[in-house]
Image 1 (cartoon, one colour):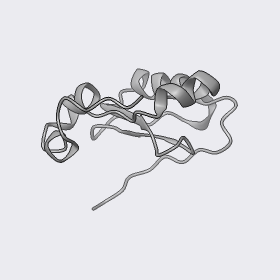
Image 2 (image 1 turned 90 degrees about the vertical axis):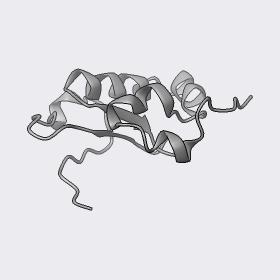
Image 3 (image 1 turned 30 degrees about the vertical axis):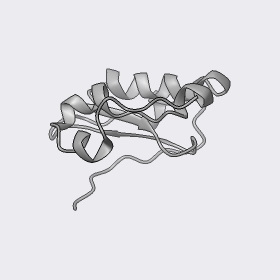
Image 4 (image 1 turned 45 degrees about the vertical axis):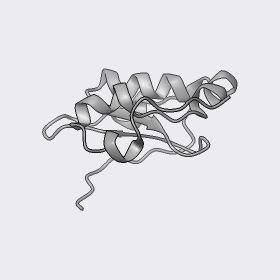
Length: 92
């Protein structure tokens, strides 16, 4: 069952990114992670390497993270079993 978020997404996105972990979530993630445990494992790896926010995308095709400037991104060796890996900087 879907829960109403405590904070609407349009408002949560205005919070500092360090607070997103507390206020933004993908309701489908718990279901997917119960069947594909790597989703939760990969998120924890990203947080352990300094991510300020990590999330499963959509219905679970990937997991992404935001890192503060200057943090060394984890290498592919951190994600044994992953089907693909990309790390880099995006400029908006």
